[in-house]
Length: 231
Image 1 (cartoon, rainbow, N blue to C red):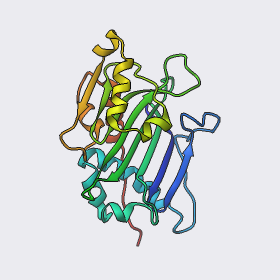
Image 2: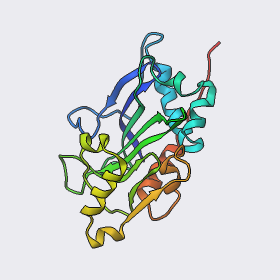
Image 3: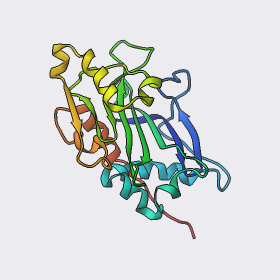
């Protein structure tokens, strides 16, 4: 049974930079348990935390622009943390089953030149079998609706965090392509979405040649969130 072991949220409502549980680069931290209880005073972000999960599910089902407006959220500028000009960011660290290698999903949402929200960055990655340290290998890299995905169980590539976050997409894809061997090319798909307000996992997760992306999509689709307001 899949479970989340850690989550990071940045610039979402009052959650300017929150990490719960462990991430791929904080392995000494205890993971979230199957039953986690959140306690705090009014206004500290409990509702924002729960809505973050609903927002991610809505991004998958509706696209990021509609998700920003859904459930009375009021649009991108209303849900981006006050005083922040950076993207809304999410990082989910989860396992498909107890003994499976963890997978990290990262999503950044920003405004384009016309002021509309879009998925500016999206990534899925996983360490190789037997790899206990170091940067995981990315098997989905999307920047603004364009990118590359590795099919099946192909390991993908290690991508430098600092350099690639700042580089333009063409430079990133060129570096990836130059690193590919003949066998790796057969396992690699260069992707361009028609609508960059849709998530790459929504489209690629429907294809059987991407089982890990499909599993994560189904995991998010299976979330059950109850929205209620007590009297």
